[in-house]
Amino acid sequence: MEPVSSGTNRSGLLSRQQTGAGCEQQARRLLEQAGLIFVAANVRFRAGEIDLIMRDRATWVFVEVRYRRNALFGGAAASVTRSKQLKLLKAAALWLNRRRESLETADCRFDVVAITGAKVDWLPNAFSAE
Image (cartoon, rainbow, N blue to C red):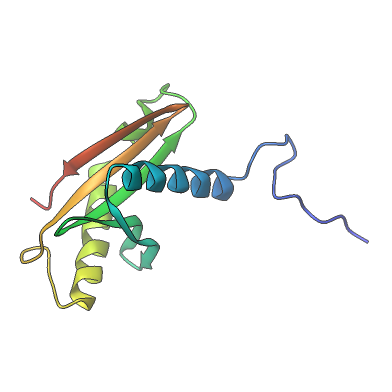
């Protein structure tokens, strides 16, 4: 009989999925403590995925959560490339469309929560649709 996996890799480290889920929980707590209201997590479309959707009063906040173990290659914030931004914009447009809204009509913004090692940076309005 095969042993049941504990969900960690051979070195005892968490899997990428477990690390990602933990970082998203950490980001959600940070944003909720700042007064934002949680709406949804891990919303997937063919165009891309939205890690967190929050409300800041009347504003939809689409959040990309990024983690990097260290800043050797620019850190977590630097990993949010224009290509990743475009995927998030497309996914947000699809999500808003389901609510009969659009990027042009809805009050929305795109935030990044960048976790590099133990350092957490919240970057409100990190990029825009333009």
